[in-house]
Length: 205
Image 1 (cartoon, rainbow, N blue to C red):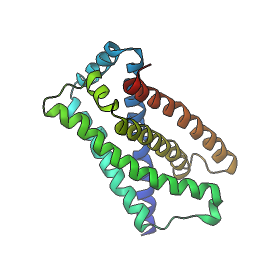
Image 2: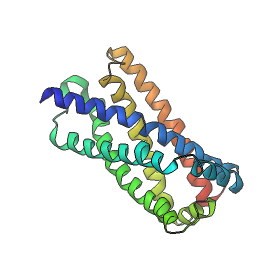
Image 3: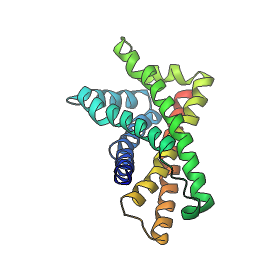
Image 4: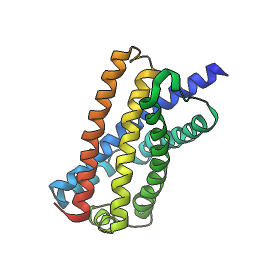
């Protein structure tokens, strides 16, 4: 049982960074082309949509890993005891709690975002600047996306710390502190990219 839980944790952290984490960063960077204007965003979106085997890539590199990560995350959160009060102390356990909360927010956001974009495209809508502008000029969705992007990026950045610990990259207190600083940098940089994009769509430059 312990070996199985150990394997589940390592697999969960691996999927959170590769491929999901890489996809999140890539997705936000592509969307950030919106700050350079409608034409720049549409070109970037069309380029991604025209990649070879794009449907297979989305299913096997994005959707299935996210689904598996989410299901495994719920299992770990609910049935695997892992509150390490003595091992990590107050700060790290707060990070653990926030990781679970942001995981739930992330799951809700991804489901809704897929509905508003991919599903609508399948129903005949055009995935372009105008589609996102129509969504994000609505105050509710503007703030929903802002809060969700912050939650998603926090979940990724803090998950990077867990990945380094579970995979033996950061074992000493010093190395874990370095990874903590790295995670903070990732959080602020990637959050800025995502929020700046939402502001562009929602209220313009």
